[in-house]
Amino acid sequence: MSIHLVAGERLKRELERSAEQAGCTVDWIVERTRPWDSASFVGGLHELSFALGGLSRRAWLEALDEHSVYLPGFVLVRLEIGAIEGRGEDLFATLEATTVKEA
Image (cartoon, one colour):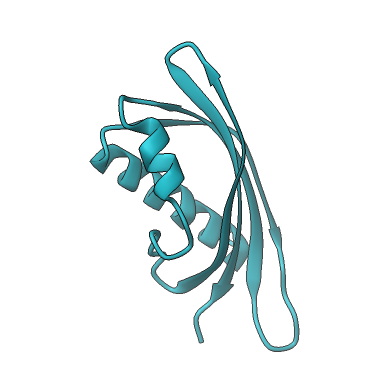
């Protein structure tokens, strides 16, 4: 499996774990991961859309940043929450992240 795909899977799993600890559920809707490499690093660009359920969903989402998510073997360089839309009991959100493989 390509490095950027590994990073994308780890990112999703860590977000799921973190959400579960906060009493939330995550249902992935769209997942896009593509390579982001140069001569000096190997990384990935990740775009995720998801539905978020649970009573603390908004607080969990607002607390997310690149320092709140640990990805073994990677550095989470950037994590940005995009559009947030409430529908019924769920929040729908988009997330963009950039990862770089640790040396």
